[in-house]
Image 1 (cartoon, rainbow, N blue to C red):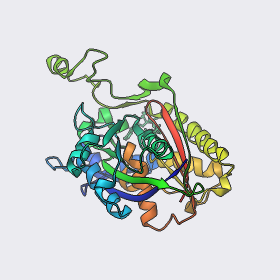
Image 2 (cartoon, protein in one colour):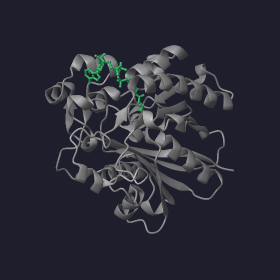
Image 3 (tube, rainbow, N blue to C red):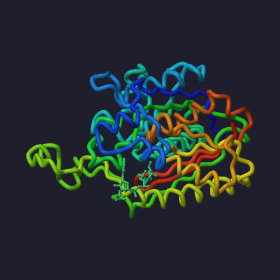
Image 4 (cartoon, rainbow, N blue to C red):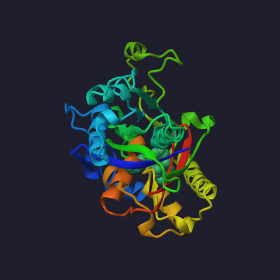
Amino acid sequence: MYNSRIIGLGTYLPDNVITNDYLSKLMDTKDAWIQERTGIKERRWVKPGSDDTTSTMGLKAAKVAIERAGIDKDDIDFIIFATLSPDYYFPGPGVQVQKALGIKTVGALDVRNQCTGFLYALSVADQFIKTGMYKNILVIGSELHSHGLDKTTRGRGVSVIFGDGAGAAILSREEDNSRGILSTHLHSEGEHAEELTVLAPSMGAMRWVTDIIKENDPDDTSYMPYMNGPFVFKNAVVRFSEVIKEGLKANDLGIKDIDMLIPHQANLRISQFIQKKFGLSDDQVFNNIQKYGNTTAASVPIALTEAWELGKIKEGDTVVLAAFGSGFTWGSVVMKW
Ligand code: UT7
């Protein structure tokens, strides 16, 4: 059995900065409300008419990760792409990245686990590498939320939170079993699937795009993201704590062993709650939601990359990734850097 280790990281953030003050011109909201409730100061939204899509942003992040890993694109054995905002209803963006990179016929898998998507993707990649099936796997989390948000007062409980961006990692075979990914723990609770969701267009409810156009109902919000914010918040703080502890326990580690915790950037208040509960210092938790908002499947790889670029993660550090989101889904990854 091998271990797997991240050998390259990359991000892509569109350069179009959207401030809270800008949003207050579109809807009834205030910088003070957004900062107090979420910690977000600004986020990136792709410029309307720009070439950025979920797959092209993922591709740009992937190219940085590949270069930093010091491998060739043809060394990649498998691609895993996590997103809730694919370019097409189908196929998923994994094959688009494969085509754009010019990689011949390796497998490309798309993961639909929202905010926990990158952790699910890492976990799947880890299993493939552990068994010896693959050596280098490209793992991407990318989201383009801004085209699909309700930017009126009606949608303010959701639209002020989400941002666009991408992060990517190259996960590679590691022969030293004390290094790299030590454990992954994944969970879901479908009972709460409708608490954070986009309901349409859907095949299940037989309400496809043509039906929505035909109905042309200005009050229809079924194709906009819906979130029961306070309920999601309450579940998030519980599940974050549980799954971090679960990961640590599986490795005979304690809270004091965490050198760096990278929580999914859902809400600064959630991260701060976990930090306080675990008694972690500011140096042991990394947050960048202030700059980018919640980028769902892209948030963990963007935060991990930025923490690493800032020199906050060093060789031998115990790094814990944790996420919670729509599904509900949640998970943790414990790594020895
Ligand atoms: O990433 C996946 C997981 N997601 C999460 O973990 C998110 C979890 N939830 C949250 O982060 C928070 O629930 C929110 C940030 C979404 C909302 O914060 P909250 O403190 O839970 O506010 P609330 O939904 O209870 O709303 C409080 C008030 C309401 O007004 P009334 O009914 O008290 O008069 C809302 O209408 O704030 C109002 N409100 C806003 N006001 C100004 C909601 N959104 C806004 C807004 N600007 N953008």
